[in-house]
Each structure stands twice: as structure tokens, then as C-alpha cells.
Length: 404
Image (tube, rainbow, N blue to C red):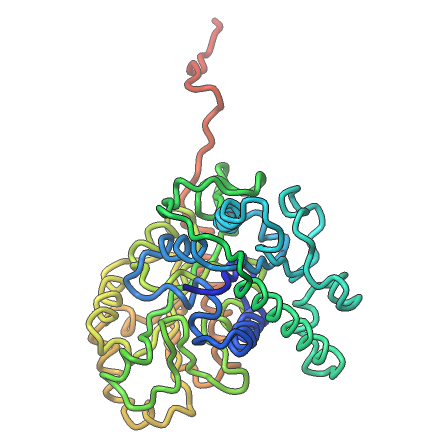
């Protein structure tokens, strides 16, 4: 059982949001006195390889004590956020305070359902109320006052979470669990279904980006290497460049791509790569595959890479960074090269600007990712699928020329 569900739009995920969740979970753990993994749940960490992503989120929404809703303009357009909201309000049965909204980004014109919970922390300063918590997190490294204000916000929110989950009127668990399709999402303007909306007319020229991480957990990687500080509980925790901020590589990649003006989706751990590629191809999205070469030594990840290598992907990027500070990778560089070539020979041996291997520093990774993505985006624009719009109201008569 997780004490709080961190409900957010995946397009908003970046190093700033990652830090906020990490700090909030750590503070809540200390105040509640529980294990770190029990304090709070975020889907990119909490759903492990092989798990059912939707079922994992539903299970937490049906059992947690409180939901932290990260308000942003994107949040209220995401059906999965609306489904999490719907489950929590159904469980609460009118009890106030089981949803704690956080002003992450200014969000005018929220749906009526989201105006009922008081926007948490509005009295914590003008910057928070007018510009949002993300603005504070971005700038607090150079401003001690903002740093103190941020810590106050995190502590106050963690104390509120503690008070709710330890109160005698804790929310009852929802049983039996609904299926993902059974839940009617709570935001009327969100796209129907459970995935990002796809335009129905013309060629999709500026689609989204889907990030897939092919890396093992710390426990898995112990079978192939000695230095394990680069890994965490799941694939998405891989950190080949741990200094200075110790964020996962997926968070840095999300920040780079979001900065280029595109919607970014971090795919849940355990989702088959072929499935992501099929969906992305149909939607004219770019797929960015972040590959740890060490993972090619483990059968499940090697099979994923081999499956990718057998395809001829138009809009995919493969990034295989190798930190210059990773001493073990330097010592065993030849072995790593052989593992990667054995797993995806066509991709590695065929010169292609969408394949980038060996980025040794975080700045180099960012530059390489930017260039590879722009190349893939150009290909998708030129070669992506055409979407036709059919007239509403069913079939129409074919046009006929009438005249002499």
C-alpha cells in the first residue's frame, strides 16, 4: 500500500518534477515512519518490468490514502489523470481533502470538478501562487530565499499527507478493482480513451516523442557488472551520468525534447518495445530508445534489442551513452562493444545519424540527442503515414460529372 499517489501529466515530466517528487516522498517517509517505496507512488518508478501498467496505477488509486494532483495546463487534457481523479473522488464519497492540488504551472480555466479542492499552498508566496512551483524549483539554486520557500512547501505538504493517512477516517479501499476501460475520466475536455489524442486530418507533421529505456534494475545488473550505483529499482532509474543532480537519464532526455516544443511520453517499464514502435508508427511519433550497453548481456533486454534490429524504423532514435567516469565501462569496453553488436548488428554497423553511441558527458548526450531527434523528425515528416478524414454522417455518394 502506498500512502500517496503522485498524479501528473507525463508530458510535464522533467528534472524539476523529478526532484519535487523525490523530495516530497523522502519527507513523507520520514514523517510517517515507513519504507521509502511505501511513502509515495509515481508510475514511471512504481511499475516494474513485466507488470501491467494500467492495473498497477489502478491498484494504487484504489488503496492509497491521498492523491497529490500536479496542476498544469496539460494535466486536465490527459484522460489517465482524469481516471485517477475519478477513482479518488469515488472512494472519498464527498470527504474533502483527499486530493491535494499543487500549483505546478499556472492553469487558468480549470474544469469545474477541479475547482472544488482548495489549491494547496496558495498562501506560500506570490511566486508560487502566480508562477507555480516549477518556476521556484528552476531558480532556487541561485536564490536562498526560494530554496527555503521550496523546503517549506515540501514539508508542509508532507505533513498534510501524514495527517490524512494517519487519521482514523482513512479512505476505504475500492474492491473489486475496476478495469482501466471501466473508469470514466473526470475531465470533460480530455481526449477520449487512455492515450494521447491523434489528429484525424492531414499528415501528422509534429507528432509526439515516446521514450523507452532499455536498462536493468540494480538487482538485475549485478549479474553482468560490478559497479551498480548507476542503477535503481527499475529500468527508468538508470543514471549513467549521476553527477551533479543524480537524475535518471530519462528525465534529462525528457527535458531536452520538451525544450524543442514537443509532447514527451516516458513509456512505462516492461512495455514491449515492438508495441511502442507499432503505436508510434501509426501516430507518426518519434521513438527515442535509451540503451545501456550492459543490458545487452541480459536475455530479456537482448531480445528487445534484437527485435528492434530486425525492423526498419523510419522515426526512431537509439542513444547508447557511455560515461567517461564509468571506470568499469572503460576497462571492459571491448566486451561491451561485442555485446551491443551481437544484439543489434545492423543498427550498430550501419552509419546512421539517428544512432548515437558513446556520449561521454551529459552535455554531449544532450547535443547528440537533439541532433538525432531532429533527423528522425525530418524523416517522419517526409515519410509518415497520411491520415484521411472521412465525412461525418456515414458514406456519401460519389461525385459525378454531369454535362454534355
